[in-house]
Image 1 (cartoon, rainbow, N blue to C red):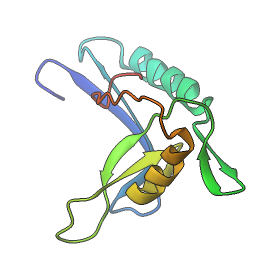
Image 2 (cartoon, one colour):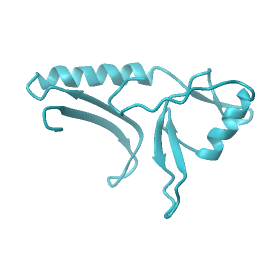
Image 3 (cartoon, one colour):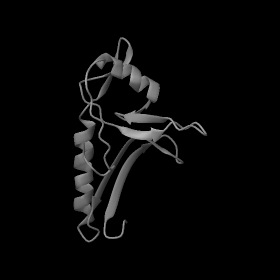
Length: 120
């Protein structure tokens, strides 16, 4: 609960201590029917899981189209300030993301950072 808002979350986890992979969140009114809110979360999960942003190619992981959506995470190295990202439920190191972007050398890009509950 966030004061006057209710947050429902669903996530992958490879261990009990730390979620990894896919993570979904939806914010709603705590006085509304929570099963309706759960249904909205499930619909959001289905929509987002239906889109593939990266695929395995001859050069390793490649951007599937011209749009990549994911989540910014910490790289897990103590005293490190480097991010990694999670795309399509898989962890992608910052250097690997840079290598994938080189396919688009000379192109423009737009980086937009959104709240985890927003649908992008």
